[in-house]
Image (cartoon, rainbow, N blue to C red; front, top):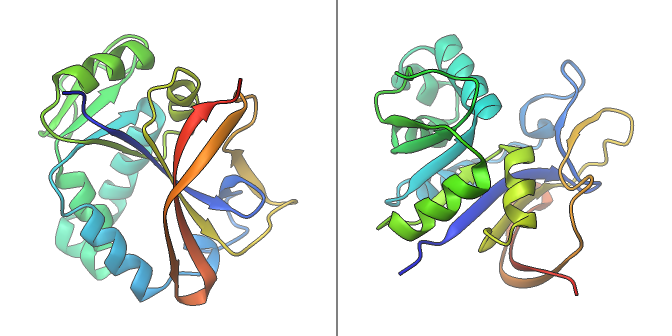
Length: 196
């Protein structure tokens, strides 16, 4: 049985994965308790995380800034603390073992090859949060089973960073789940396939 792979991404309405530093607050100033509770429940399920090197470094930096998991919980993002406790595979040609997370393993090589192997070997679902360029490659290779977009009700035409789908292939999307959170935040879960 092949494990499902979910690419879990935050987005603005115009398709940016983050704001430029110093321009918006976290969650584009749209944080909602309902969203945070939902995120915590998502990461309470048994699964294996898959990160690219840049996203791993970003989460490691965040962990060092916030300190212990208890401090991260106080900061209002217990789902991030929960996510960092899950087993993880970090795909990188630039990092060296051992990684700073005891539950993370390093996988050298091309992300497409690594994730294809993980999908065949894993007994639990696979999920990635962030890792935009890695997930674009996996999407193009047909390895993403579920594309989960959490869309924040903002347009960041002047301040957007990390365009999610720039240079990606063309895809048809089947909407398989949707949820609206306080403040107009939308979670849209799609099944993608390459457009012929």
